[in-house]
Length: 246
Length: 246
Image (cartoon, rainbow over the protein chains, first blue to last red):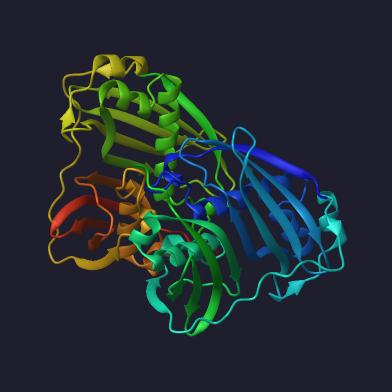
């Protein structure tokens, strides 16, 4: 088991949707910020990792299991831990608790290190990973595989200026936003996600035209983010119907 | 002069653009959160104002004067003060300082109170405003007037699910994002705003189709946000050319 790190967070107005529930794309970005602060505390900031090793962290997969989404003004605890790693992959967990200590959701993240020069996946240096006290293992559970979609519905989204992060690529959270958008307002109003599996394959660049492809089925939806015929991300989402307040 | 309230803030990764500078739409929302925390501290939370008075705060105008935009990982101080009010209008200032105490930008906000039932502007109750120690004045400087645009360029944006806040209206910050978007990626890469005047006239609802109209001129741009032929917001932005790092 790795070192744990935690922060409290009170959900602000601009991070909730029309149901007063947290916007998951924004929240995932926020959680990455929390793990960034753990890394700083351990002397392993992104800047240090880049300067000392020429490497950058990249998320390849997320798996979210959701009991309930945090709500406006609720104070939650975000606990994170770099759980385990093998030669190339690192697993990090986020556990989100309410004030009474109930688990609201958890997020499993798959990270790899990319060599900044070659853009290739690099082995995890022992010196870099040691302070996290993660477990070194031979094999890690692999992220799920996804089927190619047949006859999906398609919605197009031009990449916007503010979609880009300081690396000039679309911020991770945007992919999930485009996937949600494909489902439509009426569906989103009366459904909440209970499980989300999400894979990132390729960065999306400025001025791209993104196709958000979707196939809906009973209780779930499957998604692809496509640019110029190439798949950049895939997801499977299980939904539960929302109990609409009377 | 009113009571001042301040917080420090370190600019996170997901709040900066490709130039490593803060995304203004997100930052304005963040600043409103800061003033919300002042209000809570003074026993005047939004919930209290609604429950005791049946009123809600609405921003009508912003005026931003920008020396330099805060950058990634920079720690800034956000200082705010409810400066003055008359029968219907309240002026609040935000001052943003760098770690050395230099003023980076300031934001003047015009607020009114809306009666939740009638949706009409309500007089400012003395009991509500007293704790802020704002100056009561007969007249406040009025927000600027805007010209109607002639032969603007037009870009259309369907309102997205995550554009909406928990009141079911588009979050204020989105208007500025649509205005920026009308300028295009290449322009935004090599320009920074030095002055922004922004007026909100009407809320934008879910499932609207928004037209972002724009006229560019030397050193500046004028903007309208239009839905079904009605103007919902107007802005004038002065730009300075960016010194591109060599």
